[in-house]
Length: 85
Image (tube, rainbow, N blue to C red; front, side, top):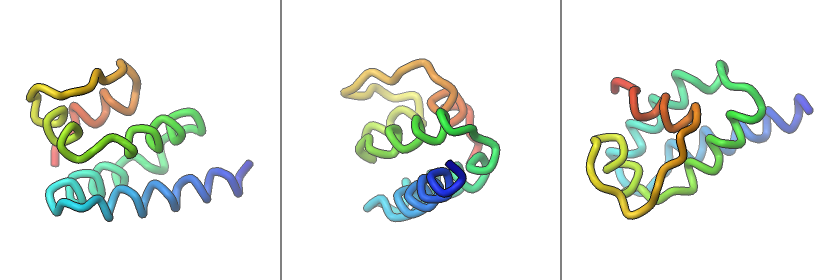
């Protein structure tokens, strides 16, 4: 399982730093650097799913604007919503 966690972390680091928009690269890169080692296996998997959301919806969610999708009430979404970049 330790190998699985390391693979998940590598995927998260890559996906959070190479988004397609500089704004989200910076915000998500800083967010994952802050919390990556503090998350358990379930939270890491939730973060992988979170990173599959498009940049526009993530940016709007972060800034408290309307999004075209509904965000679950979970630890990752709450951490991101309250993250200070």
